[in-house]
Length: 172
Length: 229
Image 1 (cartoon, each protein chain N blue to C red):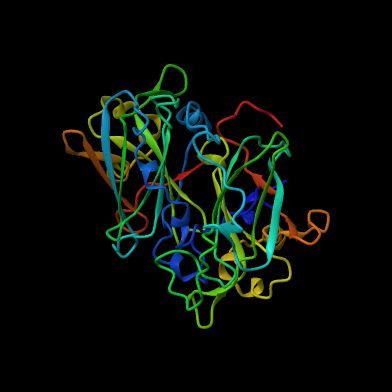
Image 2: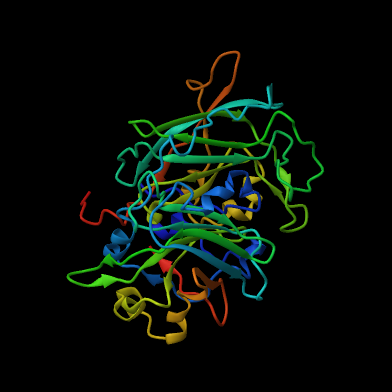
């Protein structure tokens, strides 16, 4: 049995938008609280103002105080913002580790299926050993997955759907 | 038929909005073990945190206008195993083809008794059910005289992003399906046809609502790579 076909989320998905979901700390999660601002642009450099961005992270483990999942809506400038707990390292194969990261899925009008990517953080020494980052030969492409500090507790990353600075998207 | 033929491409020229949003670079394969670790301790979706709303046919104290329908089906993985306790989000236009959404400028009336958001969870057999009204078709300016077929948006959560699915359920006999670039973006006609619900008299409730059956299959989860079918 083959999987059911994907279809676009379309422009009217905000009927299922619950803005509070963008704050993964709203139930009192413990840890280093951060803001993550994501800017989305298309192949013309235009803001993707109708995107839904979902964030999924495995650390801290999801529990009653940390949902592990968030959804945010891009604004007219193509920006959305999450508040979450900075993730920790995760196991990879053998004794290796994956650097702290959040998994992202991007849905929008014009995307018949989601784009998957990851957000890493520029201050993490483990980035140098991360197996996924290590699989990207071009340093500029690798940098497309790494958020930069935008303040004491704030991080920012640009996601480019298409073109010269296209973000690395993942096949799951 | 390859699995790829059951899924649409990013770049579908007849659907104009894909032109500047489809990535051009080859996707980077995420090894299953890395994906599994990344999502193993991830979120679980349960009614306590995400309250169900299984009747879209009433809103603000009154019954919505339109043809009342019951939509039900089973959610399974590609091996046919039921997916239990899975969250399904639902949204749709009203019977006139208008969304209760500030960006929808279609010249069709809003219905004060229809909002168009729902949420249900599958039971132990993977079954789900909700009540709504049949959504209307609406114009969308993709090409001259473009109209979307009647459809209901469904958003499904499995185990991790590998099983995440957003799709649209269509209605049998809709003449707009043969003209719709979004539906036609799935190359395999059989895979496409599985997006069309089946009228089901057994599900239909006498003197009350028409029944449509829509079964949904999610991909195998990358989060369980050690399982062999």
